[in-house]
Image (cartoon, rainbow, N blue to C red; front, side, top):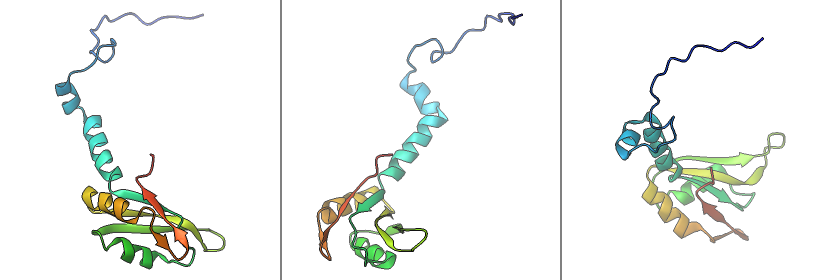
Length: 122
């Protein structure tokens, strides 16, 4: 047998009744602040593809440091062999340096490889 809870008839907020919220409501929302912070972070983190397997993490960091301050650098390696998988991530301290790196390094030839870098699609 199915029973129903009594209706409390409380008014719904605008998001619950299908209306759009105002920009002021969005500004107050913690989720809008978090997405703003996340979008800034996403603009500083680059994926770098087609790296020569002979390059190590320190060489990649040094290379990308030439256009701006690198906060972190991670070369992705095979778990069992430890060999480079030919891609990694470079995170800059600010978005303008990341943009410079995209323009400067995208398409650059390194040890017979043409690297490709950009902001990851996540």
